[in-house]
Amino acid sequence: MVPALLLFALLRSTLAWVPIDHWGSGNVTAGADENGQCVCKVFLPDTSFPGDKVELLQKTSMELSQKVELGLSKLELYESKLVIYAQKLVNLTVRVEIMQGRPDQYTELEFELLRIELQQMEALVTQLRQSVNSSSPIFDLLYVEIQNMTSVVNQLERYDKNNLLVMQHEFTKLQKKLEDCQKWHDESFKPDIGSCNHGGISNISMPYIVQLGAHVNEGYLYGGWGRDSKPKPGFEDMYWYSGYTSPYTYNLYLYSDYTNLLLRNQFKYFDNTLKGNGINNIMHGNYYYYNCYNTGNLCRMNATTFVVETRVLPDAAWNNRFSYSSATYQDFDFAADENGLWVIYATEASKGNMVLSKMNVDAFSAQQTWVTNVFRRRVSNAFMVCGVLYATRQINLNIEEIFYKYDTKTGKESYISIPFNKQYEGFVYLDYNPADQRLYMYSKGYYIYYNVKFEKI
Ligand SMILES: *[C@@H]1O[C@H](CO)[C@@H](O)[C@H](O)[C@H]1NC(C)=O
Ligand SMILES: *[C@@H]1O[C@H](CO)[C@@H](O)[C@H](O)[C@H]1NC(C)=O
Ligand SMILES: *[C@@H]1O[C@H](CO)[C@@H](O)[C@H](O)[C@H]1NC(C)=O
Ligand SMILES: *[C@@H]1O[C@H](CO)[C@@H](O)[C@H](O)[C@H]1NC(C)=O
Ligand SMILES: *[C@@H]1O[C@H](CO)[C@@H](O)[C@H](O)[C@H]1NC(C)=O
Ligand SMILES: *[C@@H]1O[C@H](CO)[C@@H](O)[C@H](O)[C@H]1NC(C)=O
Image (cartoon, rainbow, N blue to C red; front, side, top):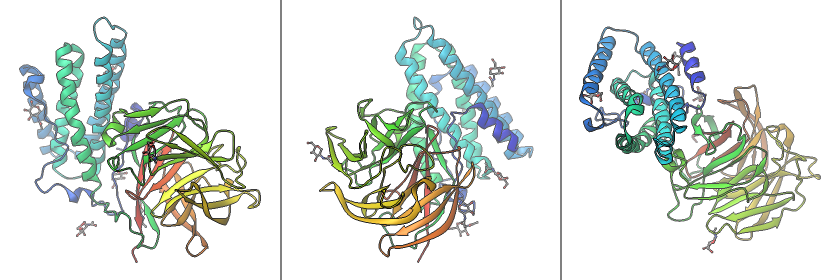
């Protein structure tokens, strides 16, 4: 079974891969919808494909049910079908590319839409993929629906333009359902937003790999994404992304919500004009904070007007002097938590040990500073939660560990061990968002997040 899963992953390296959130109990599926209906249910109108196909599909789904009834291992069935499905998806992608070479027959827009919808298909497979270890009958139904969808997608190339648009419309409907499905999978995660009434981080979930970033390119190694932790009213669901092929800040993409992030449908962007060093940036209070290019200064850009302000961060070392071990030029790491905005850096006076400043957002200046005893170059990345600095280090290619924390309230620092999984070797971005108590990671071009679990007190 495991080789099949590996094969599946290899077949489609850009496929979003979202392991189910286990807090060790595997109780996620128990949280199934009370109606016994999967929120991912896919509806395809009969008008969108011909009757003979329908018959075939019914036959296929019946055969499938029989197979299940025959007592074949559900797991094996799912996995082998998923592998085929992934192959078909790859094939379809290839075909789309071929068809794109005949623009006389299809318009650019149609293919753009199709490509976006393919991404939705990927996300759908991801959801299905999570069900591999589930015994819920809901997934049987979902699975058949996906089979239906697969058949339809495989016929896409034989459809004329009108049908293509009908398909597009239908696929778009999927989007909402996918989102609901995501929420359903998150049921075991019940954050107490805004609360610091806990004993600090106790565990980190498995990674949720959302998808390849907006540039759809694994070469965009340097990037970050997340949500504004103190959003402007009306922008509560907004997501941001910034990414580039070298360790600099070049752009900022804004998405009105998660759906549009997935669709790579930004409502606003600033491209190749914003220049900064490093990429450990953050959005806070509708400002995008970053290290101004080629100086040791702080920059922030008004996300509405794109107007940039600059301030000196006294004594801050820059120009790759004490970057994180994970990547070069990450001299300034902005972080936001329940208490506000912070910047994590190092100075010559600290001998390169991590220095932490709480920012006064109104004045855009450091209002209080703490010096730690951890050499910044030892750290892969760091973030803030409830006034506590957490630093991570690499254990091996797959495991990262929160190994250190510094409490600004008490000035107490301690070495801890909270290991967590990484999907890819290396990452350049890690930040906590107090608005949803998640960790946002950017790794090998992918958007990844983790749920954070806190120690009860
Ligand atoms: C699953 O959750 C329910 C309700 O919260 C609980 O009673 C049950 O013990 C949990 N099962 C496991 C395996 O943790
Ligand atoms: C994908 O395409 C390859 C090469 O054309 C073919 O051998 C294979 O059967 C196809 N797979 C599916 C699932 O359609
Ligand atoms: C499914 O469960 C089996 C055994 O419980 C485990 O070995 C396997 O890694 C799991 N697969 C996934 C994808 O979680
Ligand atoms: C699959 O498609 C057929 C034809 O539209 C439909 O009758 C059947 O109910 C579908 N199966 C599921 C599970 O949606
Ligand atoms: C922490 O979370 C991971 C991933 O969800 C899980 O495998 C592990 O058992 C958890 N550890 C503890 C101590 O709860
Ligand atoms: C950005 O500019 C707009 C328009 O001038 C202004 O209303 C807003 O207060 C500024 N600051 C932020 C953080 O949006």
